[in-house]
Image (tube, rainbow, N blue to C red):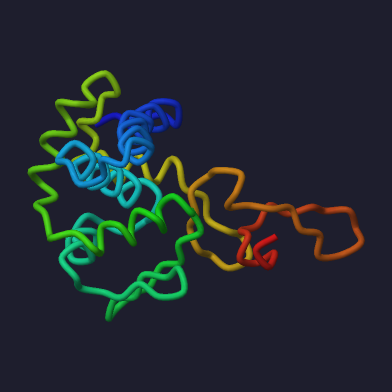
Length: 172
């Protein structure tokens, strides 16, 4: 099963972002098109912007787990969210009725056929996450390999600059 490239993932997210932005600027945030776009962008972001497996995303969407201080807390794990867009989506989805993630994934695969989104299924999503997440060499946590999650830090005066997560750099 292939992985999705960063370019395709960004393009797929843009499909839903355009609908959300248009509806928000028109004041039509109570229509089905807007609500579906929010749900589906939430699914994409949770699948590919966090290392959480599908069952955690389902559980969180149904009300299990807490979201405080930009962190999703479950009984057995927690995950810090640094992405503002995902934080806003989490807050929107938490105020919605629960929805069936599988049904939405089926719709997404049709809507996003140009982006080869068959990888929304667990094996493909895991392969993609493994390719697009980096592990911080200091704390060992995994973060999406986008610039806003990383910074350069020098620990000694020997000139070595390490790429570490923003959490280690103090959210610079």
